[in-house]
Length: 258
Ligand code: LHQ
Image (cartoon, rainbow, N blue to C red):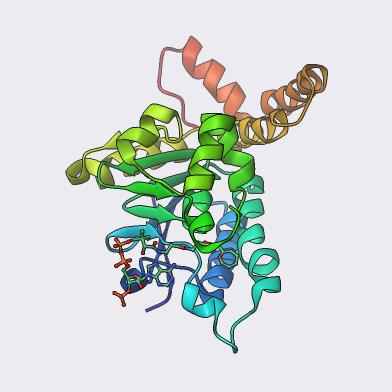
């Protein structure tokens, strides 16, 4: 079985990390395959939402630690620059919404890949662990960027230094995730969110995403200029015209993602 699965339905690409016996820990093959699948999803006009989840009981336990000590392995130099950083930049830059459907434990790079997504939802039995400090590393895969912005500097410092496990209810309370669902309805609920996103004006969602990327570092003045620029682009789309027309005609809009 491939280490990453792709299923496309109703314009939603569901990408499943698939090494369940290792809690979907990443080795080089899996990281490169994920990048290539993300590239395919970015290119395909039939994909309007990308949903990341894990096979079995975990989302992802981060780096496969056996590979780190394997003399035949990629070596520390390549792991971030060739495996994780290109995944995180794709998640943030591909102009389509990403949903992380965290179905179980998300640890290390696995947690931070989830937290890079636009919308993070978790099943009630899921958990998040900044596991890095426990093995003498620092959080990577964008963790030091996204986590303090999601939950604040103080809580991020504590979670990163202590490596404490945060359960889904605590993650929700902290603002780390958007919603938590009971295990038995989780798949239906995250599919509903992904399907809704896939029917929405894709270009506007992409502009929202990119504006938020910049808001992390821009001044207010620069951000206002950027909002103006993206708003002009959004206003030039078919979907904007359709959205306004449908409102005036009191009917549901038919967005095309164009
Ligand atoms: C694993 C792993 C794993 C291999 C579970 N590797 N097998 C960047 C720069 C360069 C180098 C290093 O990495 C990074 C990025 C990172 O992600 S660093 C952080 C790496 N991840 C961790 O340190 C987490 C390690 N895993 C755990 O602490 C636990 O497995 C958690 C808390 C995630 C889950 O605990 P349990 O639910 O009790 O499951 P388990 O520990 O029994 O794991 C199930 C199996 O999965 C087991 O295999 P086995 O053959 O004994 O059944 C584990 O060995 C295997 N596994 N994580 N990262």
